[in-house]
Length: 310
Image (cartoon, rainbow, N blue to C red; front, side, top):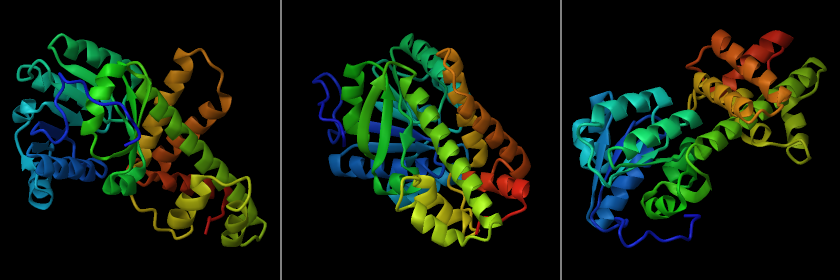
C-alpha cells in the first residue's frame, strides 16, 4: 500500500486474527470484500459480509470464503466497512446498528458520500465510542479486483495510520485531510472524469460530423496533449464499441457531480465549467437512464449532434 505508517500498538493489526465486516456487495464491494476474506484467511481472522440481498452475501461466502451474517452480527467486527450508493443508505445502517456497536470499533466508509454527512456520521458514532473514517476509492472494478485501488481518507492522522493495514483492497492510501475531505476529493475527482468524458465526446462528435475517422483521431489525440483516461480507455473500450458495460452507473456520476458542486458552494469558489458539466450529466441521466453506464452520457451528446461516436 502507499502508506508507510504503522498501526499503533493499541490498535488491531492486519493478520492478527481480527474480525472485519463488509456491508454492500455491489460491483466494487464484492471484489473489495474478497480481498478482506483473503487477508483474514492468511492471518487467522474472520471476514463477515452483509448485503441487502442476502443471496449475494451467500454467493460471496461460497466464492470468496467470507461469512454471510445478519446486519446485527456485523457489529462483531473490529473494523467495519461500508460501500453503499449514497450517504443516506449509510445513515440507515448506522441507525440500525447503533444498539449493537461496541466501543473501539473502526467504521471505514468507502461510499462516495457527502462531506457534510461524514462529519455528522462521525459525531453520531463518536458518541458510541466508534471511530469513523471517510474512505472513498478510485480505480474502478478492475482496480477492486486487482486490489490496487486508491483510497482517499478523511480523518485524524493517527486513526488513519491504524486503519491502513486493514485496507487489503488498496494499492495506494492517502490521507487528504480531516473528516469529510475524502468525500470531497472523490467528488471533485469524479467531476473531472465527467468533464474529460464530456469534452472528449464533444470534440469527437464534431470530428465525426466532419467525416473524420474517429478511431484514427483518437490514436492521434492519445499520443498528444489532449489525451485523458476518457480518450485512452473509456471511449475506445465502451463508446466506439457501442458496448457501454455497466460498471459505474450514470445516476451515481450525476450524484457525485452534485456533491462536487456542493463542495464548490461551501468553499465559495467559482467553477462555471464544473457547474455546466454537472447539469449536462444530470440531463443525460434523465434522458439516457440513471442505471446505464456513465459513459452512456455521450448518447445524449450524440442526440444533440445527430452523430454517433463510433
